[in-house]
Amino acid sequence: PVVKSIAELPFGISGYYISYDNRQKRVALSFDIGYVPRNHELMATLAQRGIRATYFMLGEAVQRHPEIIPHILDNGHELGNHSFTHENMQGMSEAEIRSELDLTEQAVQAAVPGATTKPLFRAPFGAIDDYMVQIAGDDGYYVIGWTVDSRDWTDGITADAIYERVTHHVCPGAIIAFHDVNPANYLALPRIIDYLEANDYEFVNVSDMIFPH
Image (tube, helix red, strand yellow):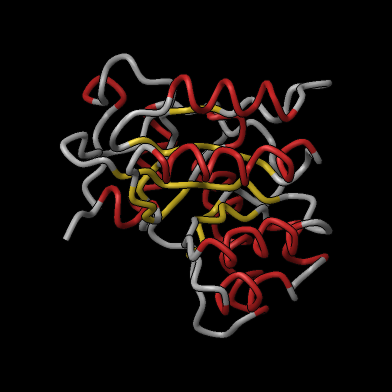
């Protein structure tokens, strides 16, 4: 794929995804997945509301819990790559970057033959540089960031704080970043969905957001 350089990415956003369409009230929910055990709760909430999301998978977690991949796919969600080790990939060599991407892709395919994380990649910590973006592009990935960081990874953050942050910053065309590590998410998510539905947002996955039909 053709990947824009950092200098060409939209100004004023907290992430670095390739394109977005703010002409429509659409929002994409995304989850960075590394810990897995409570993911069934997340997926149950999404299933009850008929929402498809995007799961950026950590390869080491997929190796430990390969059963999560068919569960994600069977529920209509899509996969992305979130590296293998969750190390900061800035400054890595080409071989190291490719290893992080390829090992995760291999773990996903071992869990479900034919499944893929391509073409979506979110870097650990959102830390990128031009070289990483180029190598990821050469390997078949668009680098996906976010418009709204829920900050659910912050120690001590409450469900109320997650709700207030997301609903304050959401806008048409937004990609919202969540994680699976914080139990507060499981309380905040239904309320966030209620707010978005009440404000006439349509839920799409990341691919539908950046590759509009």
